[in-house]
Amino acid sequence: VVDRLVEPLLGGVYAGDAYRISMRAAVPVLYEAARHGSSLLAGVRAVQEQAAAQPCASPVFMGVEGGVGRLPLAVADA
Image (cartoon, rainbow, N blue to C red; front, side):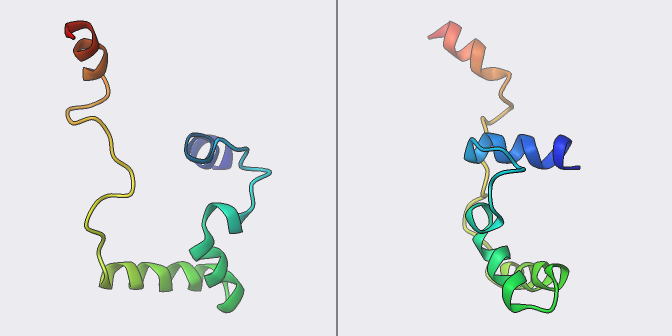
């Protein structure tokens, strides 16, 4: 899971190695939830409940409308 899911995400967002970056640096909200809760799973659930009660105005990750495949064509046309 780490090699196929976590590493590509962390590598792209933080330009770091998933095996070397700290939880505190990458996901401070979950770090605090894990420190103060009974378990990491309980902390994740609490963070999810809190997020559901206060939805974000915009997504955390954004992309190119219509997919990144449109980018080379737009550059070529420009």
